[in-house]
Image (cartoon, rainbow, N blue to C red; front, side):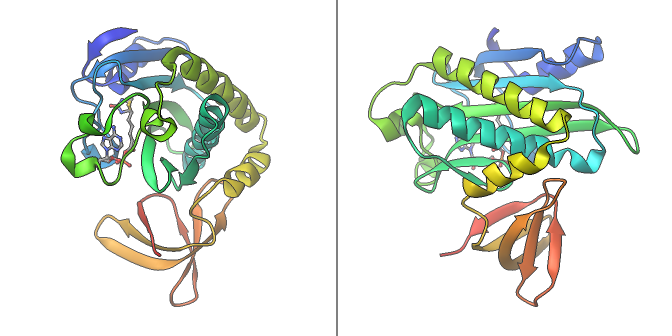
Length: 240
Ligand code: BT5
């Protein structure tokens, strides 16, 4: 537990380098360099959210690593629902939304050999008790917090404990090869499946209908040209 650090993912990376066992969790009250995917910034004001990372060393192939993002998203959505009564939706691959606004994000950083994952650092950020004024103006339309949505403060320790126990459960399901059951639950809570989407993958943009998850956790997209395309990462915009 840190009062302030650059990014909890960086702290875990150092610990991993020193050989600590999987399952170690690092929380920070504030991050000065919280990050999202592709080096984007993740705002992490002091004592307002849960900003934490977990070290995992699953026995998976690199292409199966998306399973962990999917597992974390289902675990997060279940925990938020149980603690607040809200109904979060999952946006593939790594967002949790309430009423269409982002309330949590997941950053999965992997190091791997050719055919085996060496380690995965799972970074999770949940906007718990931020008020609207505590989000920068440019995020106010697209982000929200559990406090804004429920109208009252939410206990961070209770939510943290619940998230960790749900994560533990879903991680065990993956390690036991039961990803399929998880994928079904994920699809049921997912705002992306069945929707018209545009996905930005680096410089490329594809449009189509999100049909399903495949066995690795990748998204199967029926493109506007009728092909089924397998997408393993990118930024999804939900149309309509
Ligand atoms: C994510 O990236 O959603 C992954 C966020 C992971 C954060 C955790 S906190 C603990 C651990 N340590 C870290 O340094 N990171 C992890 P992405 O999908 O790229 O979304 C990033 C975008 O979300 C930004 O470009 C902003 O538009 C928006 N954003 C930034 N801060 C936000 C916040 N607190 N709440 C909601 N949206 C935010």
